[in-house]
Image (cartoon, rainbow, N blue to C red):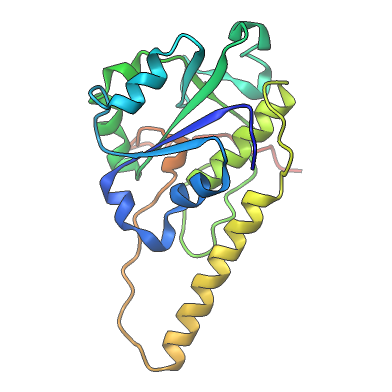
Length: 217
């Protein structure tokens, strides 16, 4: 899928091992202008630093919070880019592991932060999210592209592609589980830890909502 925005997925090594539910890798494969880098700290990562320091780029970090610009409210005007390419960094890890990634990368902490609001609830079926507003990497990218499109910062030309693939990935996992059960594979499955990581948000003991969902009714 072509996009004006460059997406850079920074994946924790633990997430890299979770092949069955790794939506970060699937997101990378869907987006023509995207990169995926593995690690915990990225201050010495040559490719990441090259993107951050390129004067032709406008790098931002998807990381909700009080200091973040809400793309859904138009808080990042096109004029702010001044002709530069928007580069969005996404932290791909579980809640427990996102904070170390953020804290060990001062260059990421210094980036402007963006967020979106009024996201659709997670479409995850094969695992439970800790809060209704928590999203996988793929879902967060889908919502982000929608917000960028509405803000005039990008053109989301294929708005169903990511979500369709997300459903297909889950359907495949459900079919495989049913086939294994049919053939007598009764090994207990190991539940995955909660993973709204794609939004790149630190875990809070209060579990505050990441991207507030639209109000009911």
